[in-house]
Length: 522
Ligand SMILES: C[S@@+](CC[C@H](N)C(=O)[O-])C[C@H]1O[C@@H](n2cnc3c(N)ncnc32)[C@H](O)[C@@H]1O
Image 1 (cartoon, rainbow, N blue to C red):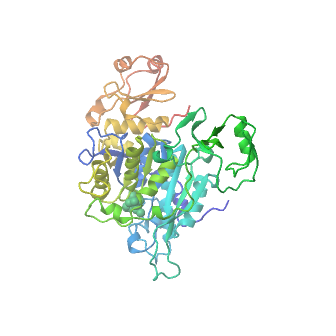
Image 2: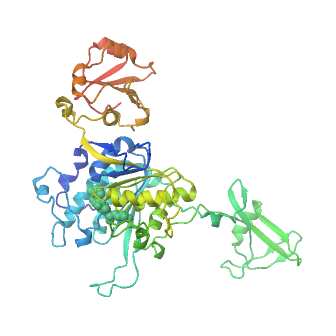
Image 3: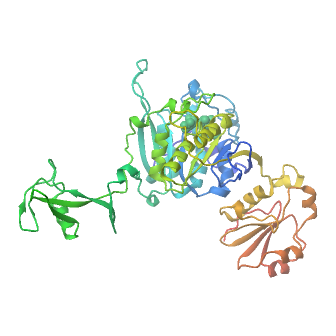
């Protein structure tokens, strides 16, 4: 398989591993809930490289659908972006902080260096049955396709869907009046992905009134004024030979007859009506050519009356269609280039429409997260008085988080920037077990921070250097651990005042803070 070579690739190839874990700090004031939690809908302000890494402990392998719309790297004013990753390379350090414009001969290299580690983290976050949709245009589509083939493998490529972005105008365009961009689609594991169908609208489904063991259906007439089937004869129950234009081919009709799925009705005029079970399919397929109804629509965004302008929001209808086709009602949908928050808008409308419980996670780094991204989501949830389309809100909540300090083991020695109990527990539990951390199950009193396949994990810790200097795993603490449940106990503490036979007796693997953090592979 051909691979793409670009400047800086060797430096960014494993950069996602070097990115430090950061704390995610809740901001209650900007949230739209009383119970701020990482398990709620989320809006997170920060660079997505750090945020995606910080999401791993809670969401690795849990995201069902990713919709991203990264900068297209057009090199023009509207598309300006700056490469700013802190990669350990003098060449890359030269790139930092400079706007990437059309004259920049390394603009494609910079863009690919930015995307590669993010795509690697996104893949780690994606569920085995999950799908990623990436909006892109001709500036980077060909590069992105080859990079995705390398990272997700070519066999997981599901499609490249050209999308109409506008129609008309463009007479001043240099070669062609460009009216499209693309949505690139990959699976984490195509074999595992259920077929992508957009469920039928309730209005459409109404006619399928009957139901049997094979699902919903209605009795439909076989006779049609025009058909593509070869003419054949049907024998009615009274022996009459019927010669009509039949909707279904003879082979299908005979199979239906054999299964008892054909009905003969005598009409008022004495003639026969032949009927078959018209079954409701799983839904409709996404068309590979995404047409007019999914054109960009600035007016949709403007209806929210948000003072600050956002230039190219994606149409809500497009994102809804992609989510509908690829997720069920409890899915988690992630957008790490959130912009004006279209993905959250789509999820909330879908939840209202089909009474589902999908969840969104938005990540956006710019200073407009509160003013634009979160504000739009607030308005979608609460409704916009006197608006044409959004007067009634969808309802719902979200929790707003910001990137906090990095979790540095050395800071425990210095007592600076000590992480909170929950944040430290999140980091330790995931790093040690590689399994999902659930903050709802922790108990600061007993020190319990979670249960993995092989361990019950405990943390004795306070974000207070004086406390850390004085506290240790003692015999009393060993005795106070909850009843033994046939699982080895993993205990993190600043020190231990018990000997090895005691640890053995209480089935404890001791991990001294700050150093002995390791992924236990059993
Ligand atoms: C093309 S816009 C997305 C528009 C969005 N789909 C909508 O409908 O509003 C790309 C967004 O990604 C954000 N972005 C770019 N690099 C980022 C990064 N490293 N971390 C987080 N957000 C980033 C930009 O600030 C911008 O808002």
